[in-house]
Length: 439
Image (cartoon, rainbow, N blue to C red; front, top):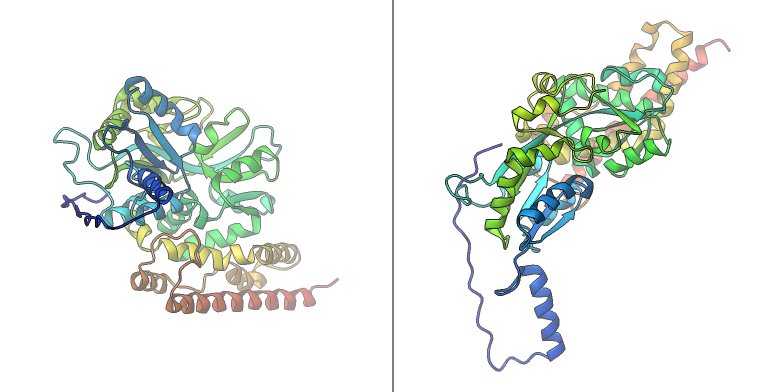
């Protein structure tokens, strides 16, 4: 996480209202009510701590209860939104005066810091927390029901095995910060070309792309599919019915909390972060409904359940170094490519892999090399993506096509044309081989 610099406050005096300016009484009451909601508590009103988070209430409730025990005079208002929507609200000016932002999306904090969304570095005093703190660690992998009859995959590459055709689910990265992290981690770990090759290979096994991360867990529980690519945080609250396997190498997500400019309870925000960092409260991360790997090293040894194949320390030692700056730069680009290449053509890609599987039984592997390359090659280079990201600096968007400029739309249209041309070439190559196969 980059250094958080001191910034001057930006206090603007409001102009005086003319004494002759008349407003109907009911309209004035409405204006005052809206003003209170937007600007927070007026003098004399009870102080409240407002928190915007991408975590579900199941994860935050324990800490909310602890705060209530220690600071009963300052109630909390916690709003849970997906990462992209939460970031958008802060980028628009934090109109509802949230004091804290709490999420496991590292690139989100990079983007917000670039825009000056957090308080000055000395906001909480010389001995207090800094504006953005890491409070916990989580990781990603895959899950399945405990009563599932299929073998649990052991490695990332196991997820590509044809035995899992149509049995895996994940969320769209454009709608899930944690799934974007998964895609970006694969790209950083394997490289741009090999990373996209892996993701395109995975499309043959995807049953569906859910609208949100929790949809993967719900789908597993409801037996809509057999394996879900997800995070430990989402699964461990339902560990009695769902088994989670950590991927190796481990892709670690650091849960951050940041103190926002424009909040109304600055001292309370500092105290809440201080509470989260204390050893007593870090132990709350070990509870079944909140389990993450504590940032407190002394608690890591007991962070995972007995049936976990690895310890917390092994996960941390096996991690890859995630570059949140790179991820922030190309956030919109990566999500756009995923939607253009996969979300928009998932059925077609699944069918192409099924046709490939049938031909693989009948033909020598070397005869299928061209088709395999077409199935797993992304016709958009890393350089092209990087230059486009630098040119547009689009940042986070809840929809990859929302608020595009005409120039941005032209670029995405050209990429779409490349991908469609490749899909058509794949269909043609498959058809040519299918005609030559003896019936």
